[in-house]
Length: 287
Image (cartoon, rainbow, N blue to C red):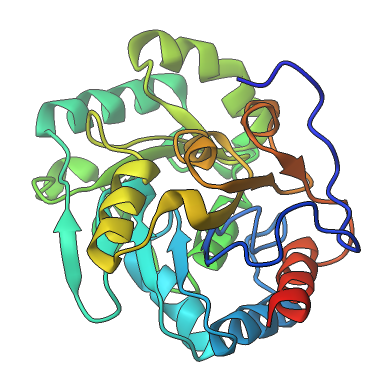
């Protein structure tokens, strides 16, 4: 943990050797997207420029696998996707690692969400199933579906009674709700589930015991012959804390949570398309 203020990165004078980094790792929501989980064209174009310059790219997201794949497809690039907060690893062609959740853990988390008045949503490799009975627009959750759909590149989200579906292949579960509601219940949830993280302003989430983004990233890098120490990573929220300190150059997005800023080397300036500007600055200097 850092003991001094994390400096804002000067994109005109990058403070690391010109032969670094050798590859990129990016979170998606809050990093490659805006606050509504939309990835804008300048960022897509920058990802394409990095790929064309020869940088291997890894996307590490709490989203569904297909959402990560769709983002790479938009940029027309090859890359690996770590989805569902590390529970799913895709190598550009197929899922090569998958970590399902224990059913008992899922069932209790769903029960707690219903008790707290928030919306449990279960993630599988290729779909999200949201608890129909607990969706309440009067509690400020009217934006939840829009944000979730944006975060998953427009893929429809089922709303069903979660007790009617097979949970055996679920890889992540989250509570969705208005940010102020989640603020109110977060301590209560952490008391029972210390592993819970705030992956988004609208979401509290857990993955299988012992599984986080670093789990997926580390096996993906090993499979590709890449070292974390030569990579550059950017993230913004609690589910990025386990992996960011392990990469050679760790950077927090402008609106990152304090725990992320505390473990990173630099913070990006609060400008339009900050990650796009970072990528372009690196590509201009090293390629």
